[in-house]
Length: 109
Image 1 (cartoon, rainbow, N blue to C red):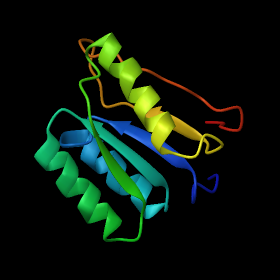
Image 2: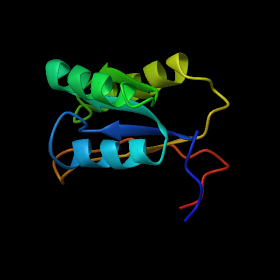
Image 3: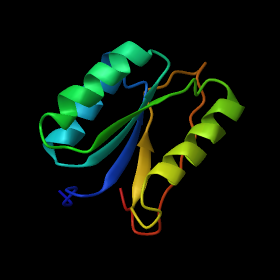
């Protein structure tokens, strides 16, 4: 598997369910995490948990079901993180919840 340490991931739906599991799995790989969800309290608790493990984790409250909110989230994350950092979304979505994906040139799945 490719070395993930130091790369950044935007995890949507990060306040519960599969989003939490994805965030924790990526934290074990020492990735930097931009965590997004609608539930601020749960999101902030996860960011604190992961930060306590030595991982950079920042919470972004957003509803990615709304296209304008998803676009704003991408802008906020881009403004808060080093623009040269590679990042990709890992959406926890359903058919009712669109996701915004952005791939850096250096990312390969």
